[in-house]
Every structure is written in C-alpha cells, then in structure tokens.
Image (cartoon, one colour):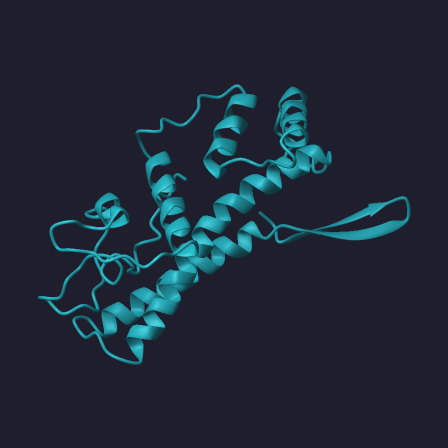
Length: 206
C-alpha cells in the first residue's frame, strides 16, 4: 500500500497515512541485515555481532507481524470511513455489499476488536470468496508468525530442557534454518537457535 494519501474535503486538506507498507519494508530490510551477519560470522557466537543480530531479528519478527495487523485494519477502517471507494482507491474493486458488511462489522466490534487472522477470514467471507484453509499455507505460517510475535511481546522466562522443548520451538522447528551464528555443537533450541534471519518467514503468496 502507498504510505500516505492526501484528502481534500470541503476546503480542508488532511493526510491519511498507511503504515503497513513501511512495516513490510522494515521487516524485509531487518531480515536481510540479520542474514548478512549470519553469513559473515557463521559458527561464531560472540560480541558485538551476536547482539546486533538479535536486534535485527527481533525487529524483523515484530515488523512482519505488525504488517499483517496494520494491513487488515487499514482495509476495514477505509470501509468504515467510506474512503478509497472509487478511482484507484484500495477498496474500489470490491462490491458495495462487501464494503457495507466490512463497515458494519467494524462498527459492531468497536473497530475490529478481534484476532488478526479472524479479520482476514471475515474479509474473504464478506467478499464471497473461500476462506483460507487453517491447516494449510499461507494460514499456518501466518498463525505461527503471530504466535511468535505474541511470545516475544508478552515474554516470560522459562527453563527449557533438552527433552522438553519450548512450545514455540516445537511448533517452528524444521520450518526454516536455525541460527547460523551458533557453533556446530551448540544447542539450537529456544530462543537463540530459533530466532534467526528466517524466523519471520511467510510464504510469498501471503
């Protein structure tokens, strides 16, 4: 989405900003920065690059998840405020019935007080399209990404044993390469092994 949109109404001019595109761009950039550090320092877990790497990874995960939430909120807000319904507006391709359903639901739920993926599924239903299969991609990766974001935002320290992996580790293990900074014999579980340059992974089709 475009970053901003200037609107003129009855002689007044305002600026309407869309941050989802900025969040997506930030996610791609920070993931690339983390990947460069892993490639340049493979097998070496040491300061200062280990700390810098974690900065980039955490930023990328948060930005990726925040992109999904901002994107769907922007669409529903535009429907509720009847913005972008004509010309090259984001909602112009949608049927008026779809926009009306979006606006009414947004109002009834106190501006979309619901889970991000639920809102995505509702938008598809309002548009008369098939909802995403919750057992397949891209729903699965999106759900795991949001789960990882929630684990980080509401972080609670836990003792992780070799014979009892952390829940987020169990769910994400094998879906992407582990942290390349770790030496060959180092433990590759949660959090250091899981939080890698690829831990914000989502299929391109999402």
